[in-house]
Image 1: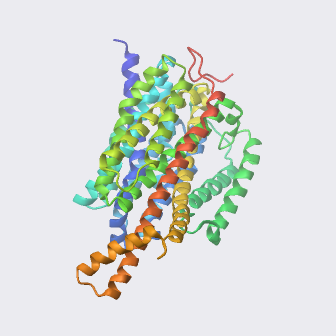
Image 2: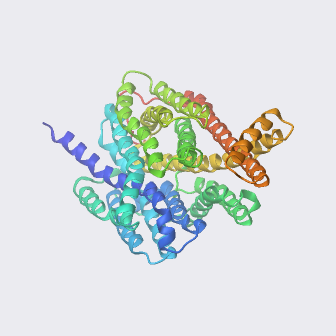
Image 3: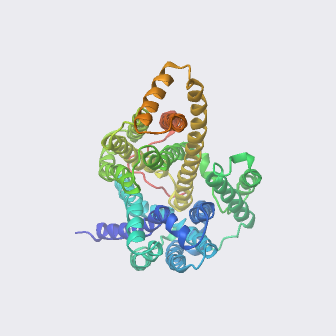
Length: 515
């Protein structure tokens, strides 16, 4: 047996562990927030910065990973990020107060931001051209395994030990990951450490622009968007910084973020598609648990059981998608995935308050299959024609667009849910009057039941109207969820025309060398 395949698989195992660390830590803290809130004596708004701080620093580092890899050497940089991430995890676990925890989460998020794009770039280069789809399938399985295991692991550790163990668990994984990267990952000649001019203005503008944008998306709905001076200020800082960033970076010989990659129409189209996939995927995942717990009365555990089949379906379907790419145009596979994603949302759009547990499983399975059909071929097409020495830059931008799309999707979904609920409630209340036949019938039934139980007539009358109003709010809520799912479903379909701009990698051509 040749030594090349063995080395290829060892490299794959080595880079998947850091990526898995990052993905799990993005979702593992969500379920532990109530426990953190009580332990650290923090309010609901304050404790949410445990998540926001991580996402902001993560988003800032993502697009500059290629530049950092060239500055420090790719292997050295990846090992450094694993070390910092692991140590920051320990510090998060021993944090004595919320302020310390947020600071350590910023450090953890900054180190974690480079783990996925670096791992993906190394993995793609380790596999020959005809196995690029397989490489992306392997990476996708690892990335999708995180959201499945993260909440379950976080809940189990929190319930059986304490929330601090969701950070302590990273230490042994980090040690193994560091050992494997040290042993099996090497820097190719074109990515050897080089002396690069530090783009101070680019670093500053990127940090301000992406950081402020992430804060706006995470906190906008909570602070009532532009009615909040803080959100307005962050929006202005983000807009001005990002415009200046484009101007400055296009004039730099060694920019911190390589915006020239977007001159490739196929690369730009692929990033836009991934942005919208992130929009629909994360938007749905953010409101499905709310739907199940607030409207259907499910527990957190039951909600997790509803979400889990989607991840399992993705894990099973991803290798099949890689095989399908060898037989048909990859763009057709992506289109099928977009259709599955839209179909899953349209199924949820039709559900009422009488929907059973099993009814929610099928949309999640359809969504999981769709994600598998999208992730593998879209990644392969978008990054397949990028020069090897630019792969770190391209992978960082690709992952950044997915994450920002997810943040926009979550913000849009929660905002639509709130607005639709208010509008529906106003419409329904207008039809609930003592002169409405349906209202009279409902009132009579409720009032009769309360009087039969011996309630005072006046109290029974008040309770009847209170119950009727609660019913109106409930109906307005479920209609709002239905309408939001419909919008998310349309998002999957509206991006489909961009597939025509994607360029399928030529046979025998993977990541290419620069000329």
